[in-house]
Image (tube, rainbow, N blue to C red; front, side, top):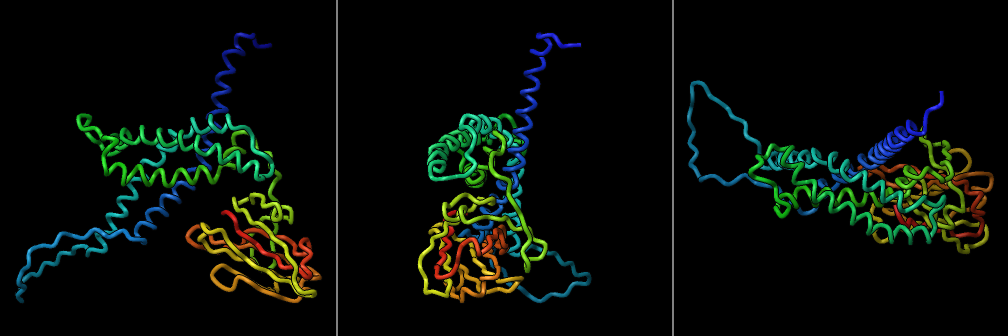
Amino acid sequence: MDESPKSRENIMPSYIAEEQRGTEARILDALFPVILQGLQLTHQAADEFGAQPRRLPAGPRMEHRHMEYQHPVRQRHPDPESYARMLADRSFMDVAAVLMPVVQAVTPPLVEQLLSFGPPKPEIDQNEEDRFAQFVPQLVGTITPIVTQVLPGLLQSVHGVRAGHPVRVTDRELNQRYLGPLLQAMLPAVITRLPDLLAIVHGDQRAPVRHERVPGHGMLDLARIDRNDLVHAHRLPDGDVVHLIESAAPPGTTEVRISTAPHALWWKGVQVTGEGDQEICFTATDAEPHARFDSRSVRSGGNVVLWKAQMFGVRTPMYVIPIGELSPDAKCLTFHWAAD
């Protein structure tokens, strides 16, 4: 039996709401782990670069005399370093406790902003980057007020603050311990994952990522890229932009160089392998950034493998391109890591 127009009218809003909730759930699933990792790194960086540990207050000076007790009682007190670590752990857990509700509050308006932006292009070129640059201030202007508005109420409910003593948005501890770290973790995560978030909202219009296993790299699946991705500096699957610059080299030789943008501080590497798993050269940002070898060593096969340091500094092979696509004879191949 066909449904009447009136019944279909009643069903449609529910269907749209379900679609909206599904999109929000996918956005939350993509963003939350990245934001949590960013929050973790923020606290680690604060401990490592200049944050002074809290020390226990110095007690009165006392003269210690040797005394004997029939039943000695030993009490264990944390030393200053352990006490500072306990405080830092507690501080991180306090902020992490309100992270999920904050991200949940931001997600619905974020989805609306992404819908208004329109679908992403299959390949990110300079025009698309310019469009992103104009869109980012809108995202910041959407996210920051929401976080500022919901945080005091969240802290009041999570920590059981009495209704007569509200948490004020001008409170210094609120801003130093919560608002600052949360925004510092959230904004880079949203902006960095912008192409992926747009693909979730509008449907992924990009070509599917091809993966393959390279000899010598165990069970790792590396993303297969091509010369066009590098020459035109397209955004790669993990968010990286690597620009290939080709120049002349002496005949019969191939040169490989690696460089990075000034803000790219994490380790990067370029490996060239011959047929099988034979390594011909490996250049990296913490070692020799230039290598030269005989072009005949890769004439029968071989790959260029791009490496980078991922979370917690783990050095990982990420992308592979057959070196034959680069026509390496008498060329200097400079791989400039422009963004990650």
